[in-house]
Image 1 (cartoon, rainbow, N blue to C red):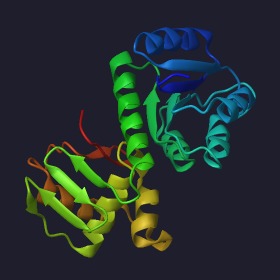
Image 2 (image 1 turned 90 degrees about the vertical axis):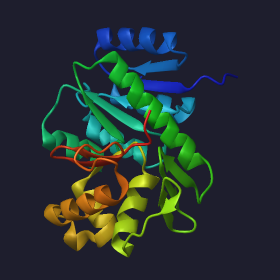
Image 3 (image 1 turned 90 degrees about the horizontal axis):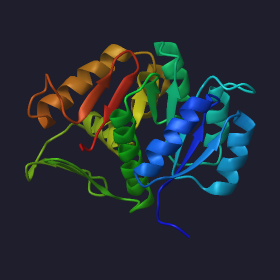
Image 4 (image 1 turned 120 degrees about the vertical axis):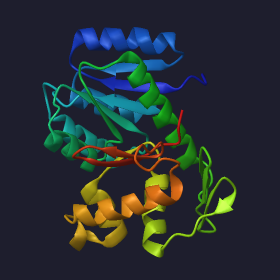
Length: 231
């Protein structure tokens, strides 16, 4: 038995697999690797990973399909690592259940930071069913529906709170515009991106020290938003 976080890498590029094995092992992670989608699905079923790193361009099946199949039963963070950098590809992967998306070539430190965020998110979701989410000076009590900043309660409208709670409960994940709109306002409003932007601006004004340069309520251009707990 080991307490090392276990990362499953599904990628058909031998050089990427070798590099990730070395980099992640040196940082204290246990690594399992697969070069095909079906192999990755089988390993995920038997090896209980804490994080999955997934390429979209696999030889036997589309990585988006792999992500969808993993999400049918696996609830750990999935980080997509792909040369595909279009907004459509990112949205498709995220809507299929991915938590994050990095484009190749990638920076090692950025990938490691995304993994740390993913593991914190996993820890949060595996903890209390009614957690208190803390991000710097911001505290969100999901049980009592109370939000505070620097110890003082922040008054939010019901919709602002629902938006913030959905983001906070998925801390570290990139959430697409359609996903947020569908969960907060209902799927009939899932294309009303401008409506979402207005509410995000209101939240930033109430919670961020500098709303023009937010630390916690981050924009993923063309894709959606991410609530980050900070490093």
